[in-house]
Structures are given as C-alpha cells and as structure tokens.
Amino acid sequence: MPGGHARSTNPHLGGIAAIVLFAITLLSFVIESQLTQYVQMTLGYRHPFFLFYLVHSSFFISFPLHLLYLIVTTRRSPRVFLAGLVTSLQSQLSPSGFTESTHLDTPFPILRFLLLVALLTVGITGPALLWFAAVSLASISDVTALWNTNAFFAYIFTVKIFGLKWEARRIGAVLAATLGAAAVVYGGSTSSPDQPSTLSATMSDADIVVEVEGFRPSAPLVGDLLTVVASVGYGLYQVLYKKYAALPNDPELVESTRDGYAELSASGSYESIFDDEGDETQAALPEHADSEKLTIYPPPFGLHPNFLTSAIGLCTFLILWIPLPILHYSGIEPFALPPNVYTMSVIACIALSGVFFNAGLMVLLGIWGPVVVSVGNLLTIVLVFISDALFGRPADITLWSLVGAGFIVAAFGVLAMDMLKPS
Image (tube, rainbow, N blue to C red; front, side, top):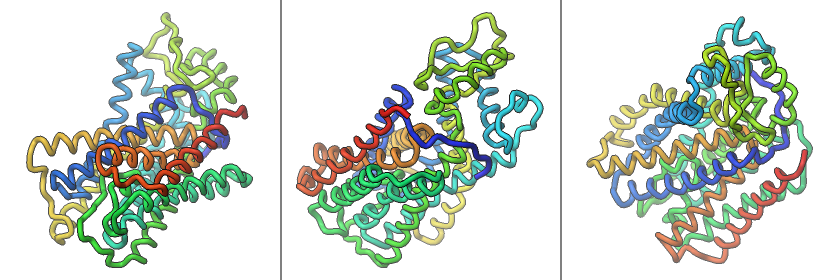
C-alpha cells in the first residue's frame, strides 16, 4: 500500500465513541448473519455471490451518511470537513508526510489514492472470495474453524511488521480465542460435520454463506488450504491497513501529538475537535471564524476510515459485477433478482447491517489495531451462538461450546485490560 507513517503499537480504548462503535459492530454482524441465513434457508433466495456484491457495494453509503450526520449536528459547512479529509489524505499519501502547506502547494495524489483503494478492495475481497470457494469444497465447520485462525496470524504479522517483542500474555490470549472459536464451531453442533449449525457462518462476510442440506465436501484438502490462505490474507490485510491506511493521528495518538494540534490550531487554519481521549468536543470552530476558510484537521472521529470504506464500496460496484454473468452462463450461480418486495426488504437490511459492521471494523482497526479487533471479532461467534440457542437451535448448547465461548470472552478481556493500562 502507498504511503506509510509511524504508528503507535499500544492501542487505547479511544474514548466512549470507540466502545459504543464496537458494540454496534458486533450487533450488526449478528443481525447480518441471522438475516442472511433467513434469506437463503427460509426464503430460499440462494444467490451468495450476488448478495456479497450487493453488501460490499453498499459500503458506499458509509461516508455520505457520516458527512450528513456531521453537517446536521455541528451546523458547519461540509467544506470544512472535506478540506480536512483531503489534507489528511494528502499527508497520508505523501512520502514526506504533513506540512502546513501540503494542502495548498501539493496536487492531490490521485494515482496513489486509487492504488490505495484498489489494494484495500483486494485485501478485503480476496479472502472473502477464497472462503466462498472453500465452502463448496470442504466442510463448513472445518472452513470456519480454520478461518478464525486469522486472529493468530494477525498477531504474528503485527509483531513482525511493527518490530514488536513477543508477549506471553498476548500470545496466550490469541491462542485461547482461536481454540475457543474452534470449540464453539465443533462443540456447538450436534449434527454431522457436513451439516453444521448456523453459528458456523461467522466470518466477516456472513452474506456469502451457503449451507445446503446433504452437502458432502468434494475436495476437503483443497478447501482447507484455500481457507488457510484466506485466513493468512485477512490477518495480513488488517495489519497492513493499520500500518499504511489508518491515519497516524487516529484518536489513540491524540495525547502523544497534542503539541502538534496546538500549533495547527494556533495558526488559524485548523481546529482540532478532539479532546485527549479522542472524543469529539463542542469547541469545534470559533464562532467568529469564516467557516469557508477553515479546515477541521484531523477529521472527526471515523470520517477518514468511512471515506475509505465508501471508496471500497464504489470500487466493488464498478468492478465486481463482472463475475455475475460468468457465474450465470457457467451455471454456477444463475442470476435472479429477489422474487418479491419482502425478500428485497430483508436483503436491504442485510446490506445495511453489513455496512455498519464493516465500517465499524475499519474505524476500530485504526484505533485498537488488528490483534484486539481480530480477537474482538470472535465475540460475534459467541453472540451468534447465543442468538441461535435462544431463537433457533437450543440443542446446540453443549459443554464444549460453553467452554469455547468462555475462552473467547476471557481472551478479549485480557486484551481489553491491556488497553486500559497507561502507555
């Protein structure tokens, strides 16, 4: 990925906004997963790649919705937010980093930005499509268990790429979470490995899950290998996103760069709207200032990653329609629109929940880093398991699934406690 700046390697909670966002992200995944299962199993609309395309294309609305929220709540011109966003992107994509004249004297690096978006789209789409291919070849339980090792790979890549020391506590937490996920996937199902419970469908793109009764894996070794590649790729994507795509002035770095904010604010050209914890404050811009000449820098919480998420959605919409006719004419997935308004409405809810989940994921990767986020994502397994137990399949509650869920929760608790410690 282009660009690159120094990054903090000690994640912090990032304020109440990050905690609330994390809760919304987890809830959104559960809703997405359950509605996807409902559409494919109950409503009988089994077109997984088309659902995948719709959900990922819907990422585009992330930035417009966030910008509209800022305009309504702050009563500021959109130009002050857009100008700060452009400045951030110029700083991020410039080899020399930020200077006060960056946004004035330097043309916007369009090619580097397009390369960044293309790599982000490949990074988030590639592992999902490999997973999609794997589920047609191997047992969904095996595929899911192997996919959830991405937390372990994320930790390995974090240590190597950021040049960190191995920490026994973190290694133990990541391994415990990975083993816990496997216990829930296997121990939570009373059916055969070829007919797993719905909680096996717990990857970051629940919209591409396929479960067909009577399915028998045709090439389990190939499917398992594809899943391992997908898991490694997704772990690497999260780390590279943190290193190259997330801003160096994410909320976790506000305290360490406080003097830099003061200098920019004093210049009269910029005004920070963050406090030391990364939360938005009410003192955004001076009332006497000309809002058309001011820039909010750094951008408000989440605006930069939401812009990148929207860019990924647009890239997906423009490019990933190409496999649709290929899948149709090859007979792999005949194209068909939803048969009625009700099905379309449910799919719209899947897309919206997918937008919230993936947009939240992008924001949290910048704040908490890949290790905490990847382990935190495993909590979705616990939530989907609980949801299935309460509303779907109570028989799925077993000793192993309870132990596995406990391992995941405990592992995330250990990492969360690390974030509470002062740097």
